[in-house]
Image (cartoon, rainbow, N blue to C red):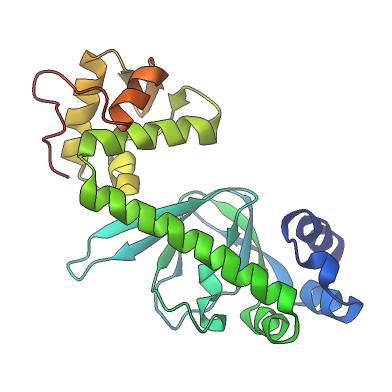
Length: 239
């Protein structure tokens, strides 16, 4: 376990080379492999403090909940990504409450919050890394909220599909309309209607549980608002 944690931390964390041997031993002793099954809720209550999560396999979704129970996906964590807001209790300036769930069966390396907090107090490089990562995640969250508040649904869907092709490295996206809606912060009915319009425009080819991208440049034009959809899909659909 120690060797595995050390190898991954060397590749992932810029502060590792600035740790003392004692601090490295502390990290290794306080880091454990954890497996979360699909649908597991890792972090819901503001008092939860899991610590730092380094995703090895699978996928985690970070989201926020409204008073009426509607959730909005803020970002997702993939293999090699680091979950910093799961240790927000150790960051005095970060108080934004988030929830985290396992989208798929997910294996992580979890460094205990108490261990990470000690490193924060004793090592300036760890503190700089933590706040830089937190600022990066908060910027992602702000961008997501700006999309929901200010961009039309067709542009948001086009942006989402372009982002997914980059993540997957493929023109085929294996997500249902309901999943896309959840990740976009929209409604399934809105996504289904827009997919139909995108198909009419020859931008995508829908399939059962997946979409195939046919025209990346066309999607980019919709995303940048330089191309509008015909027959009612002109960015007037709310959601």
